[in-house]
Image 1 (tube, rainbow, N blue to C red):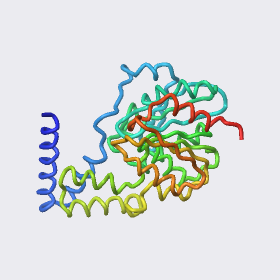
Image 2: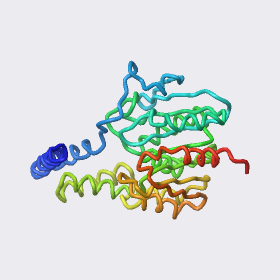
Image 3: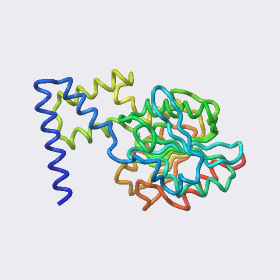
Length: 282
């Protein structure tokens, strides 16, 4: 019943946007973009923080008119930055943090724009990357770990900012081709060609890249940092082939295929491999 109601809801929204496009195309396109870029889940309240975040030193930073929320497990001078994905927040790392803490490292998790305790209503990768750069400049992490769209944002960040302080990156369950994500959204709402072309023009104008180039596979070609990519064959949110695309162009990376973990990628065995990758002696 819930699936039927959700189907009817999405198609009704799509019909409204399509009808609006024949009268006010710009307004319809902006509405379609807002629906696409505003997360519906992942928010937190300071009064009800998950337990894993209550044990951290939480800090809120102001940058470009927005609040950026971070959580720090204090340790030594080795710093790891954790970057979550869409409709999530810093608490998603609760199962990985114990493995990283064994190294004695300082661990910092960030809430993305419009997620957790960070401010904003809109989420997009370039904006997220700006937040990451602000935190990187402040805390100088040697390691980046990203999940899902957080992983893709890490790849975008390093390809654009080329930060030499980043020694290694771990990318978990990350999508490659943004066009696939956008096309799925357009199909879900049955949006017409006017809206489809309008959305593509919006991204070209704001990101200065054609959608075909706004891909993690493309970003990876510019990255020299050593990387580990892990993707699960049973991931129904981001298909396994997306991880393979990234690995195919990231020359200085290794690829781990997992089975039965789904999109969350929570697994003791995987976390041990991640720790070994980060802290192995050369």
